[in-house]
Figure 1 (cartoon, rainbow, N blue to C red):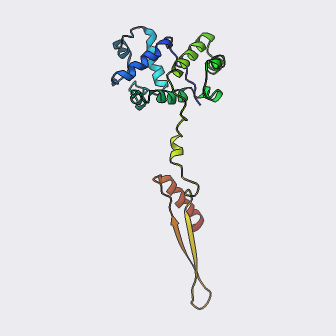
Figure 2: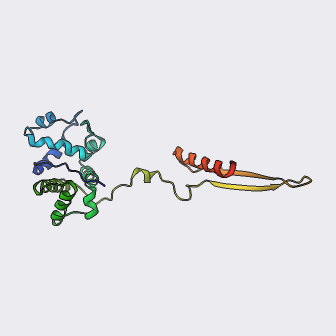
Figure 3: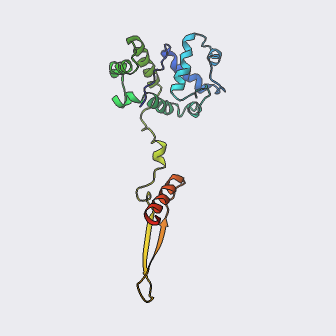
Length: 206
């Protein structure tokens, strides 16, 4: 779970800042100089950079991420922001799936308890969250995690083994032979195959 402690005092200008992101070309590195070039010379705007990092728009070195570039497509910007705040503020969404202004006191309390924030700071954190919430579309369900995408169906997760017993026709004590056919699942995950052959070695060869 996650609850970022990044916030800005200029939360009222966040819609304008993100409009700039949509309208302008992505820089190689998003720096305070880039903010100044946009006309945001006040030091209060510097907190935008750690907020963008918390939202996954910037990498740790300030380089725009794929999410930054995807947000620039205005047809998808609200959905992308929805994904971003669901990740950065996931603890809040366990309280309310779709937070509203009526939940403000509850959300401020969560910031206070999680980050040991003062009432003033907790209010700024909540105001930042609500400003971002206005830019987001939460109507779409979040996409499943990547590990869920590669998970095998239950029927495919185990190899199919067919053993045929053949009794020899020779004299004396009959000998038994087994023909084992292994139908491997359709996957590129090498760990699946490693697990299958390890199990075969333990149960059939050892």
